[in-house]
Image 1: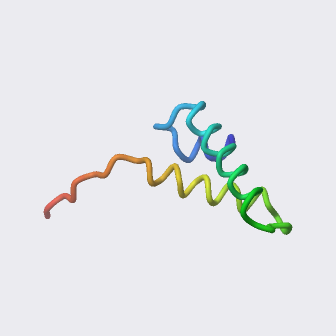
Image 2: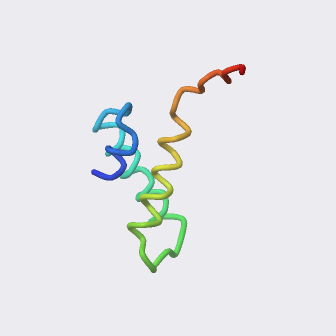
Length: 61
């Protein structure tokens, strides 16, 4: 969670933790990931946190 907290500093610690735990629970129920589950959970949680970011308007040149 420290890595994701550093990667997404605009999300508070609780949001990062809840996202990681929810991702872990979802993957535990629906998949058979047995090789490097921590890496897979980190990647999936990071994707979810990225989707929560506010969209920035495109800057015109």
